[in-house]
Length: 111
Length: 113
Image (cartoon, rainbow over all chains, first blue to last red):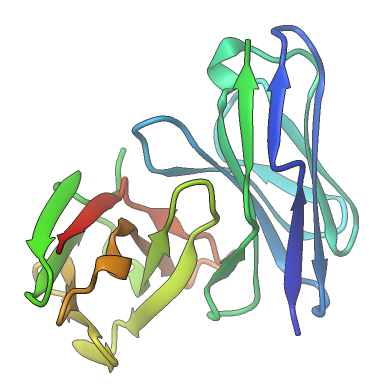
């Protein structure tokens, strides 16, 4: 069965510190992978998506970057966090027209 | 530019009654629509979907209606149960080749016992 792992569950980081969130998928090959963010009082905003290894598309200009070093691994990074980077980050995967399966999310608080 | 809109940020419904959540979209290229349910501090979970070739899809207590001419869809939950209290997101995608889902801003549904 397909599963998605996302960690850590919660993270408190100071402004200006780096960030690395990791997401891995099991039980499927060549999935589309996504990073979403839910900011306080807002909906789900697509940050990055990837259709294959090394292929990253950015949806919004921001302080974050993403990488896909392996087929089932998706990493969200930042060199220097801003207060506005606080939010609930979600990783998801999909195969054609089967909808998304989301990870359990990471609550990031930048202080 | 919010292509998928959920104009009601919150909704309260008495237990046992019908809950109706609404969603509007602007992009006529969208042809596949989904509803997700989200509890606090968890990832959204898939609830029900509908393709643009249909106008209704039913799964147990959940029914989604699609009105393509109005670019409107709705989720009906009947009867509503306390466990249905959550945030519901409407999402849409088109055959753009990348499977991106565009989400609405969500509606917080509270079922009153």
